[in-house]
Image 1 (tube, rainbow, N blue to C red):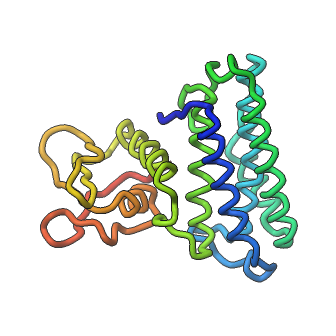
Image 2 (cartoon, rainbow, N blue to C red):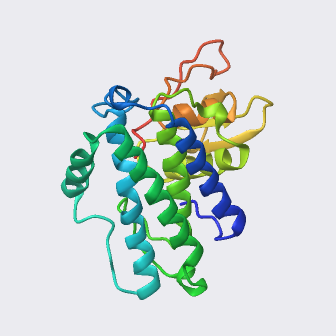
Length: 241
C-alpha cells in the first residue's frame, strides 16, 4: 500500500489540502450542512464529523508507532459509525470548527513525531501492515476525496497534481491486491500506461488521471473514460474500501 516519506513537502501537501477544504466550508450554514453528500446515507454533516473524528483515530496509530504499545484506530466498526453519527447533527459552525481544530492538531502530531517512530510497524483499521508513513497518505486521501463528497463545487480536476498522483497510486495499489478485479489496462489521455490489473488480455480504458480516479474511487460511473470502442463499457470493479 502507498506510503510517502515524512518530509516538509509531504506535511505541506496535507496542510494545503486541509486549507482548501476549510476555504470551501466558509459559506456553509446549518441548512447546507444537512444536505446530502455524494456518499449514500451521509449528509455533509456526516462527512465533516468523519473528518474530525478521523484525526484522533489516526493519532492513535501515531501513538502506537511512538510507544510500541498497540493502539487500534477504533474499537470496532460499530463504534466508528456511532461516533460519526453522534457528531453529524451539530450546527455548521461547530462542525467546521471541529474540522479546523482537529486538522491543526493532526498537523502538529505528524510534524512532532520522532524520526524512529516513522519506521515502526502499525496496522490501520483497513487491516494492512504498514508504517506511519501510510497515515500521511490516508489523511491526504480522505481530505481530498471527502472534500469532493461534500458537493461544494470542488472536483477531481481541482486536486493538485502531486496529491492527485499520490491518491491515484494508493487506490490502484488497493485494486492490484483486491480479489475480483478484472483484467484491464489504464492509459492516460496521452496514451501512457498508468496502471495494469490482472494477467493476460483485457480491455484498455483511457482518460485523464482525474477521470480515472473518480471512477476507481466510486465517485463516477466512468464518464469521460473510453474502452477504445467509442463507448464507455467499462470493466466492473469491486467496491473500493
